[in-house]
Image 1 (tube, rainbow, N blue to C red):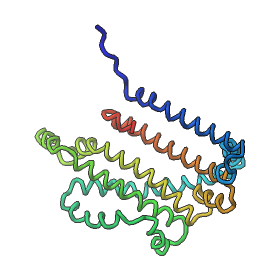
Image 2 (image 1 turned 120 degrees about the horizontal axis):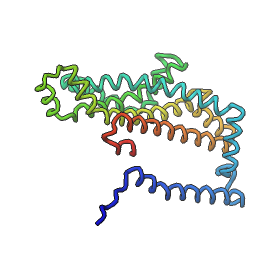
Image 3 (image 1 turned 90 degrees about the vertical axis):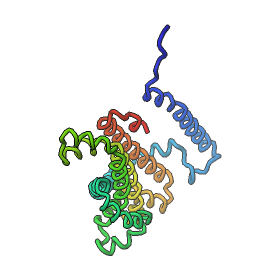
Image 4 (image 1 turned 135 degrees about the horizontal axis):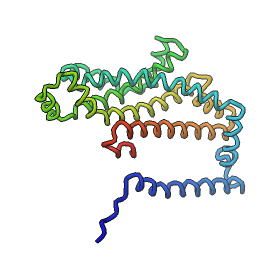
Length: 265
């Protein structure tokens, strides 16, 4: 009698993606056919082939690459500016109940505010240059990183800490060997959320107050009614999001191999 075969999570995920790829290909084919037959307006729904050629031309002449670089130069500092303080304060609030009780009302009051609504105030304080754009991204990133880190620390079982203490582990050792590894899955989840929020706010800020960047190119494309360039820019933003999430999944898989389901989410 043979043992039942086991399907790995990665294999199940890979097989499950086929319907999505087939559906996407069928949609693009129908879109292309409708555009070529004149059933779809080229102004609102340009043919995918036209979008692809526009995308290639924009990279060839350097326009798309320049805007992509500008977006990344705002996204990365904004992510670091918000994620590092969020991580540190989240670790502290998760470990220290008094600090958590003192800071929680302020966090609860500020977190629901639309961060883009704070942009005028940030501009008054820091001017209309790159600093304001990076700071507003950092403010948005701060909260998901803080809350996930704090939740990760708080869910650590006290039993683990008691065992470490009984074995003579000092406070710093208990933190680095017990608290940090146990909360790492939630911290990485917070980082993934923060990275996506950073990209969202970067694009939004570029639409509102920038002359370069993917968001600025989206707005410019709309102003001059170059719909095919607008679609091409949206494709670049989507691919950038896929690349960011893919990189963070690899990081999660390497740092928390005992929870492989996190990298598949």
